[in-house]
Image 1 (tube, rainbow, N blue to C red):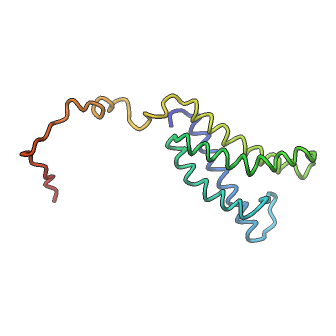
Image 2 (spheres, rainbow, N blue to C red):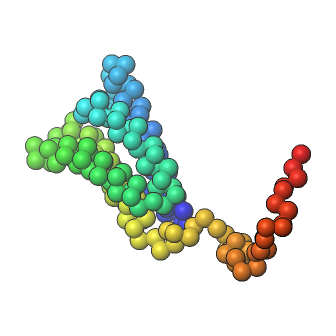
Length: 152
């Protein structure tokens, strides 16, 4: 992750995941909460599938960002579209806002990874690239070389 905006999108995704986990927990315990999941079983499946997607999004994997985006678009996008078609009331406005966050955060995360030019080489610091990327200076071993590490 290279920029502050990448950290922000990832933090918002993790915070939104935590909020949806609280919503699912409250619904499964049948405690009245201001936000309710549309389908508790799908919500739990999406919560568990989001964990590896967020790990790979932190590692800047585009395939994980596509999966993350399609999961959230399928779950929150359809409900947001239904709320929009029915007309947003005062009680539905909070659900619409949550659905909007559920669509916008993965969309911004996807575009952030897609437009990041340094996606492939983010693992090494610039101070150590010369050391790790120069195989021409590595010592060449033959069959007589001692390859023991002598660790105690």
